Length: 165
Image (cartoon, rainbow, N blue to C red):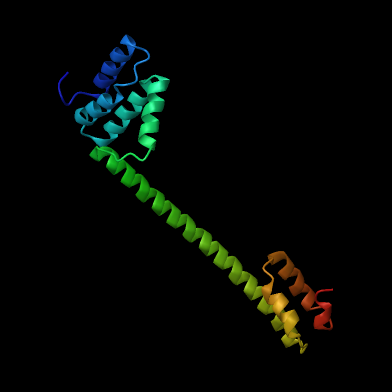
């Protein structure tokens, strides 16, 4: 087989080797190295590695996965690039998720603060004085359903003390 061969050719080599010794699991570094030489296009490299891993005996596959999962410094540019790409994608996804969660939390907190201030504004508009401890309790509430209930109640009660009754 000449350099620049296909993933299929490499898979045939792997299959022939494995057929000779079903328990063989010490030669996988050579298969990975051969793959890096044989395929110059990234999608083909992924396909070759995936195909090789799927064809290895269980013991060999586990040994390779354990070795690659350990604190191994990758030797090939391919794997360094894959790891860097995976880290960058993970970082971007984490940042986007964190931003969305932060935005949702901020919106919920803003909505709760707005409802609490609306409750106090209803009392002010009705000329009802709200003692500071009660105003602090209303401002501290973050339960949207409870704030809605308090707002509806605020327009009906005759005194601020009746609000929490």
